[in-house]
Image (cartoon, rainbow, N blue to C red; front, side, top):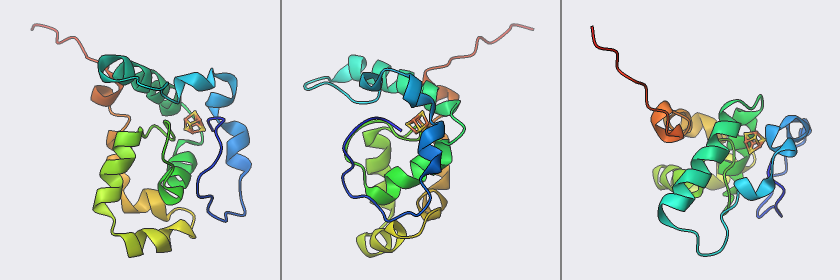
Length: 132
Ligand code: SF4
């Protein structure tokens, strides 16, 4: 997981997934935008972080945690800040409060958006169409 102070930490009993995150051997600055970073610079950095997450063995655990904790900053589990904001708009506040205490429910509540966050398009991968 990115090295950043945690905002609202759900009381999970299992945190072992953090030891397996690929970001532990990656520059943490890739996962958090510097002040005033906007536009294409921010998109490119987010995409680079998402590519790391896309190969991470604990991506879903990480995404689940970030959704339930309502992590305000950074790319977690392939979800950018904007991705998480889109997810929060689909989950009402009372439901979000319930989710916070139950591991697995964050990803379950937003499965499609969690998958879309690391789609080829989201990662900036464009396939070359072969002419037949
Ligand atoms: S999914 Fe991404 S942010 Fe989460 S532990 Fe893996 S590499 Fe780190």
